[in-house]
Length: 530
Image 1 (cartoon, one colour):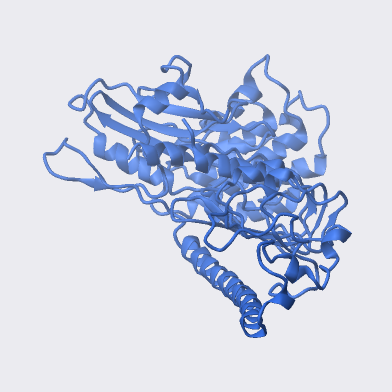
Image 2 (image 1 turned 180 degrees about the vertical axis):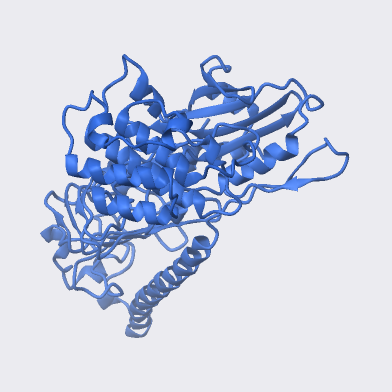
């Protein structure tokens, strides 16, 4: 299956991978959903990238050949950066490219003159006044002859000398077809208007070209601001038959997927990686891009057997609203009645749960810096969830088994339930649950709810013996936070502020450093399924 928008997103990610320096953090939002909202990217109404404008950002690196996969790109503006190396030929051969601005960079190799780059503007010259390359040896075809009419504005470091050199004064006569008699043999009256007409036509073409560029730029700006306001993909309301009347639940920004696509991704649902207390099975899947997903499927056999359909829909809606990078986000869902299925698609954290790392004998050891970063990732996510209304998950679901780890050991809080969790216990809270996890991270012991409330031993007597080294002063301060969470239970924002001061780990540092492009393919799947 060909997914052009997936290729566009991957091409942009390849471009980002070659950026060695981004002093202003211009590309920090590259990797979030959707790619049309990324800085400098403008898309058409169907999600195809048409403009990439990253001028004046001091970006340093090389250009990725994968930019040639942006087949609908009309404008590529990289002026005033520090790009070096070679300009890929794939870029110059883009069929729909109209503006290519590479001025004020450090490209060291000769510019690959593609067959489409017919008009060139060196730096400092008025873009509306161009020097044409020397005319070809063959005569120009008459106006009525069919010919390819392609014109690309190219702004880049000085081209080879033969292009900068001006055409000889007789160049205009060289364009006269051989069959035309010499000017001296023609009556003066017919010849002069023809020459003047030619000059006027050239000026008209230049003026029209400038107007087209200006209008195109203005249209691109309008499209950019319109698309910025349309970040959320609206999914058509789904109607349930369980109550005999229409009950619509809209999940914004989350694609509705086809069962056949998930069957392919999960190898006919043969790769089972777990189950939940709500009788749901968790499958691991792999998209055609290589990105991995986790698919949660309900065990009920028919719609009549599934009595909690509407509640499950509201649970999906709540999870879709979390939108935090330390949360195992809901990225798709599937609802079909024949055959019956209810599925939720999540990000996949390949390194398993925090519980396994802390308690499994054969698990890899988590050193002190990793534990601090994991704890801070959980804290930032819990603070975000605590501020949402209604709460997407219950604090009773928050424990080390519901925290998963990415390949760079960042925390991902998860909620693998189809139904909303059990009613909250007034004796506990998000702060208490977080304190219990922090206690477990420090001690390496499975927390006992009863003993947690009466913890009096100092941290140095309870610290995980597998930790070979740690900062004792930091440990003591963290332990004070644990005791406060378990007893006084302050606001979560106060807890996060103290932890940030103790550890020095910012919200940005606690985020996963990898940005998979699974959402791009899921958007394509959902689009093709409608």
